[in-house]
Length: 133
Image (cartoon, rainbow, N blue to C red):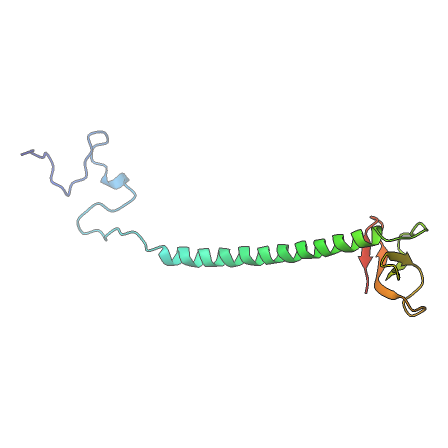
């Protein structure tokens, strides 16, 4: 059996000696019990809040992505259409489907003649077609 120099309730270390007053926690028998907080509730609340934020941000990005795809498709459609003039930035143009199935761009509005109107567009300074109808 090992013989102890000091009783269990005395704080003593061979390196620092009697150091009870230097410790950041109580060391006597009558001190309050040190117990770990239950942080599971706090973690769950944090996880739920962060997940909702990520989901919200993801949905925003998803909508932006879908809008970008639509813009790309409209631009591709207009740039692949037939036109024999150089479009001017800021002007409004109308896209029609011809009887042969090809798309063409025109300055003539949809109420001025009887053609199948696909959409109305404005060319911006970045040379991007913006659908305005």
